Image (cartoon, rainbow over all chains, first blue to last red; front, top):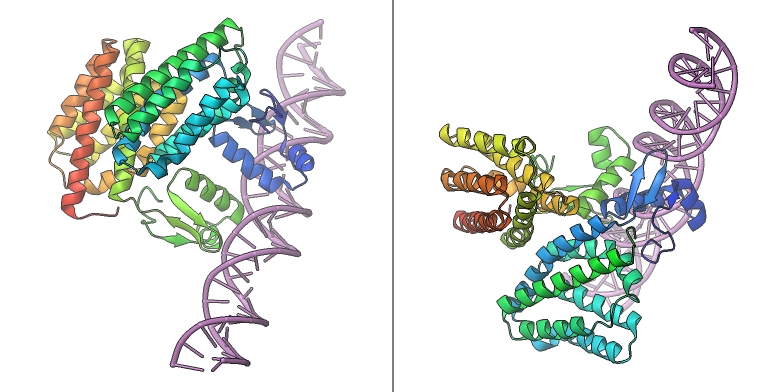
Length: 204
Length: 204
DNA sequence: GCATACTTCAATGCATACGTTAACGGACGC
DNA sequence: GCGTCCGTTAACGTATGCATTGAAGTATGC
């Protein structure tokens, strides 16, 4: 519900309210709230329930700093694993889906393929902790990506960068994969950041 | 209890057992178990309770890959913040405590100061998410550090490296801080790894 | 009129209760 | 004797109950 913006940032909900809304008791609601708090999506303040956290521009900067640190490492690790081609199939198909979506100017499909590429990459890198951490901050930035999806120019550069990273990984070239990914992430980050600034969306 | 090895790796405990042991009901135990599971310290398997996860050599490699990605970034961010000297006091005193402990050959005190330095650094870097992630994997490696503390030579090199990082941060030199930290982390990681291998401690 | 102390009450954190489910042991068939 | 099916039971997931706590509103004194 939070990722789909059914509970927009700033929303406050008490345990009992959500229990009633979702037709269960307070116990599972409570467990979910504690988990969402640890995942950084909500703040739980006793007596006031949980509040869906807005994501500020500063938060986005923090998130992108984490992604810029972790994801290139994941690309490097994956390249060095030297997996057979068939195990890289998820990345291949994500690349192709991205290129098809770009040709059709279908932004939602592009975003979905982008997500598949990134989650596929960290899933395959062999480091579960790293993968979980990337997915955690990735989810936190989900709303921002969705909001800016239609504001940005068609992601032609980004699509090509994914393909280049894919090639480096398939070739087992860890250094290239890492550096290409770092550049990709940095360009995407600054682009998103300036887009947010220009559009006056200080809070997402 | 897990960090202090009061519940050694491999230990299995049911919710009800721990509730009895700790003198409370299942509810808070359950909440703690779910949190520890998310933190990667235990595995919860229905009908078998939680199991304290051992940390394998491969896990240590994963952990150090994460640390090597995140901590240098934290050092860079902190250096670029250009904090006044008094706000860097925790790092200064950690450095001094480390040097004193080294002179006294007091390994436990050294480990404590080392921990203070690293947690102080990520705390001050200004990126809460990054800090939380570092502390999470840091805790996972806690047992391994404690077990190897007395097996390694006196950490003279490490102590000097901390001081150098400290100087770079105080000077506001982000690039140096990042690279010095990366080298520090990499050297420490390979040292720990080979120590574990040599000592035959495949599981910690 | 404003600040302070008190009262009230709602939300929480934990304890307990209950129905469901799957793991273990025994019985039965082969 | 071995494999399979079934019953028992213990552990869990969720529901509910209860005491505690702190926030909001009210009354009182200055």
